[in-house]
Image (cartoon, rainbow, N blue to C red; front, top):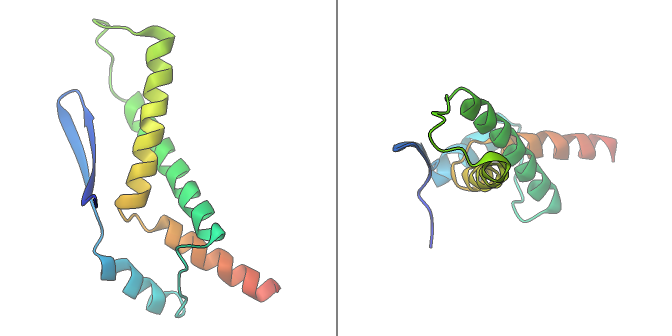
Length: 118
């Protein structure tokens, strides 16, 4: 099963981040970044994707902080823990499926640096 977009639902509103076309970023990044190829099965790329996930998680946390709580239903600390875990999973899913491109750019830069150093 493939996911075509990442959807985030909050208070009957949804934020949908469409998936990038398969050839869109990959074809552009290879030519725009000096012809570098991206090995998506490498450990380095997994770490770059984890970095992108952390970045997206920080972005979602700041977005959540702007929404006022009604006070009608307060789950306390349990709600906070669940909410943090839920948004961690949203961030992982969005970074894998939405095609932000941050992981690709970081991978290319780090692999370029390791090539120059090695």
